[in-house]
Length: 209
Image (cartoon, rainbow, N blue to C red; front, side):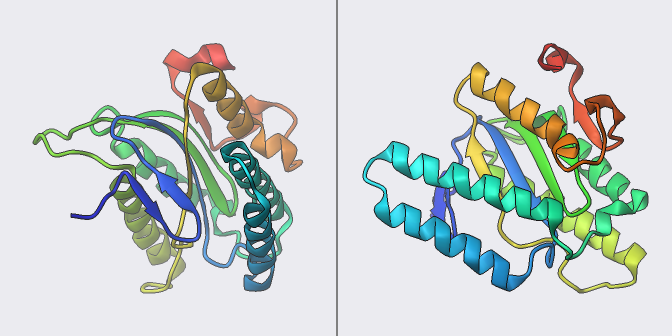
């Protein structure tokens, strides 16, 4: 049986049942292939030099920040500037809320999405739930709906792999939510968190604002 709690593609993925996760994914073509390979090779070089687990985590953090910064300035695809498409993504994110996930916070940018969510351990039929399956469902449905509007049915909308990180404690959750809500500010798109139309935080977590 496939082990969905841990798997490796370009990045390692640890996805324990019932965990809280920070997940990021972007449009296919948001970053050029050449620039992606540059960033990924830099990450692999840092990993090869890593001695401790802390070194490995730091390499991952640096890679993520460099990648996210690149998304802010990339001249690639920016389909989610279209409010119709951003709304589809937002509605899709909310679909499983209070059913299979607790949707804590998200930010939809022009070419990528940041989200924090808690996965329920089991669905309504008692089947175990995995982050990989939830994210694939969100990406598949939203891609189909967005492509229909863009008249590009059958073409790849999202980059295949996502970045995910287990949120280990409340302090880390605070930092990640702050990072998500500040993303449009860091990109120079607005001055205040509440000014960005496609940001969300669940009411129970308003203390993090």
